[in-house]
Image (cartoon, rainbow over all chains, first blue to last red; front, side, top):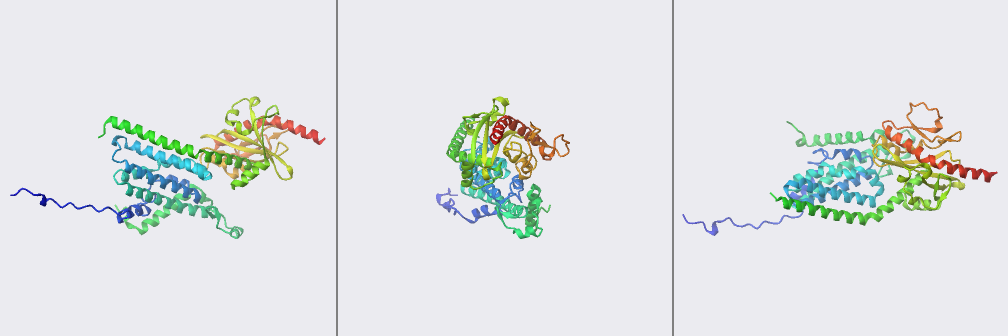
Length: 227
Length: 239
C-alpha cells in the first residue's frame, strides 16, 4: 500500500467568517427575551424585580444598569477568557462586575441623582444579581466576545422587559400614572375610583410575575416541566 | 494549569487596572455629584417649609431669595461661620453648650419668618437626618422632612414618607415654657403630655422611631436659648 500523499489529506476549507447578526447570534440575543428569560424562566434576579418596580422610571434605569453590566462584563470576561487563571476565575469575574457596578452607581449619582437615591442599595446589589455571574460562567467563559456581548444585552433586555412590564402595572394601578404622568383622569377619582394600595407593596410584583409566568407557560408547553 | 506566579501577577495587574479606571470615573464625575448633593440639601431645606419643588432652577432661585443662612450658639450669639462649614455629625456628639448650631431662616408670604433646624441622628441601620421648621412663635412646628441611609423599606424607611412627616405640622415643642420636643410615641403609650406634643411611631419601625425621637430632642434643645433671646427682643420691640 502506497504511503498517503498530500493529496489524500482532507481539503482545507477556509472557514467563512460568521456575520455579525447571523441567525445564531440573533438567537443568542432573542432567546433571553422569552424562551430563556432570566426572571420568568431561569427565576433569577427576583429580589430587585420586587423592589424597584413601584414606578416605571427607577425600573427603567435599573434595567439599563443591569444591561450595561451584563453586556460589558460578558464582553470583558470573554476577551480575557483565555488568560484567566482557572483557580481565581470567580474572583476575576467579581472584580470586573464590581468595577462596572461602581461605574453605574457613579454615573447615576452624577446624572440622575433622584433616581440614584430611590435605587439606593439595589444598584450596589447588582453585583449579587445571579443573572450576571450566571451568564459569565455559562456563556462568556467559553464563547467569543461578540456573541457574549449579545448574550449580555439579551439577558439584560429580558430582565428589563419584565421589570418595566411589572412597573407599568404597578404604577398605573397603584398611583394612576405612568412615568409620573397622570393617566387616570380626575373625574374618575371624583366618581369614587381609588388607587390600589396593594400595587405599591412588594407582594404585588410577585403576583404580577406569577401571572406572567402562568401566561407564558400556558402558551409554551416546552417550558412546563412534565416530569 | 497556570503557575502560582502567573496567578499572583494576574490578580495584581487586574486590581491595579480596575482601581485606575474607578479612580478616573470617580474624579471625573465628582463635580456633578457635588452639585447634585448641594441641590438636594437645598431642596430638603425647602421641603421643611412645605415647598416641594423638583425644578432645579426653581429650587436654587427660591433658596437664594428666601433663605438666610446663620450659625448660632447656645448663648444666643450669631457666629461668623456659614452652615456649610459646620459638620453636624461632629457637633451633635458635643455638649450642647459647645455646639455650633446651623440655622436657616425662611421668609415666607407677608414677611413671616420660619426657622429651619437641621437634624441628624441614628436609625436602625445607619444615619438618619432631616430638617424641622418652626413658626415665629418658636413653638409651633410648621413642617418637617426626614431622610435615611438604609432603613428597612416599608418599616423604618417610612420616616421619609409624607404620612409620617405630615403628622408634625402644628405640633408644639414647648410646654409651659419648658422644652419637651415633639415626641414619637407608640399609639398605645399614655403620655402625660397633650396630643400637640406627640406623633405616632411607625409600627414595625420601633428603633427608627426611637432614633427619630432622640434626634429631635438632641438637635432642637440647644436652639431654645437662642430662640428665647430673639423672642425677648421681639417682645421688647413690640412694647
